Length: 269
Length: 257
Image (cartoon, rainbow over all chains, first blue to last red; front, side, top):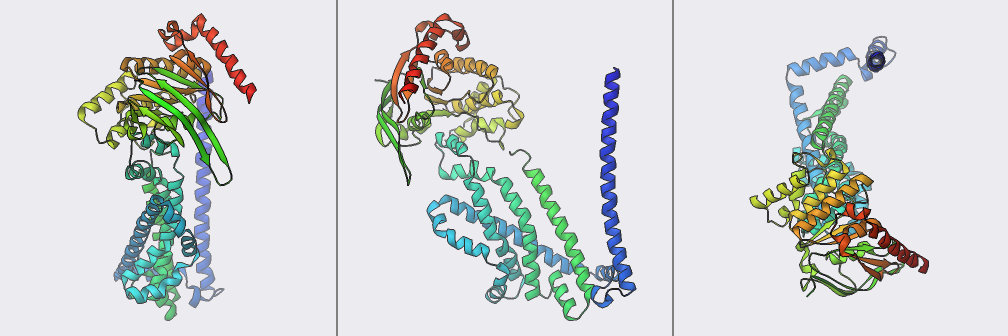
């Protein structure tokens, strides 16, 4: 009885230490956040840094409030979000499809191998001008940028995962006389689901790059456009505000995919 | 007419730098309802032989006939059980045991009922909607057996199905598998390292010698032991006599290589 009490007490102590440690972590995170913005504000007001280039948090916030009020922020944000989501979804789906084709035909995969390596090592944003001329200076070409940047790497990663599925699972299916298509649907694809989701996570980040660069090049809408416009008229408050909004929404999107990952692959592994 | 005929099976693997003969001149017949075991040191091509019997790979030479038909045309008549359960972790137990029927497009409500009944006989009722990782090793292997039997194979191939389990679970499962197979009158081929397991479960035992794998010797297990369950057989006095005989022969094989 006494022993039990003591163990309970120790357990509670342990939990309290955990909670305390977590609080300290949160505390220092908050301190960094506050110090950064307070330092930025002070440095800007006292002209330690050039307020014209580096602006200040208060100016950024005021501008943000103004842009929210006139609704123009939502229009720009909406475009960029739509392009990014479309880009990474299409990129992941097409990349997985390409991986499936490579898995289906080992011969084709051998033939295409050097081309995949070349395409993968090439900086895809360099294709921007060609895409814009070919597709036209509109939303489609920006989505194409968001897609093309992630498609090859997805194909390579997912194909590697397809090939890495334990051959004994395939043996089980073969003894039931499974066709190649059935083998793919019942074992290869579901076994690679975790890899596909983690490719999705990487692709979120990549698609933001593609979309922002795409908007730099052509757009008259979107956060990338706001940045380039702010740069052209030397309004760096606008540039910094756009950056802040991008940071927030890129994080949210990443967290959403992570949440999806937890939901979807509960039972694998 | 024998149920399963192996006629002069040879198999050779080719790689860029080597040629390996895994099996050479294996000829044997197995009767319907018989339980036979293959015993042999590692490297005697046991798994290759099983894959050939199952029709998964074509031998370089020789033929395998199941009821006078080449096996590669009768894949659906052969069930294969592996060393580990290889239940699909993303499928529930019910989905796992019905996968064979689903793939063969023969999933009817009656067959489903039959499979679930078999699951119950294996002591797994109530686990239908659980996932494999929620089950213990022995339970998973039992579920894998249900999956194999659900498609009603005529011949069952067991590739060291108990080797990944702890000793107690293994003994229990031997009894269960033995009783199940006998009650359905299935023909079975077991591959194992475990001499005791081979004696306890089989009607006949084939010893294989390695590199290249070929038939070295065969033993008939006396009717006395065959009447008993594997666990009882292990405790019978003739068991240890046969054990000694086989042990000596295996020693010969090892010495000869």
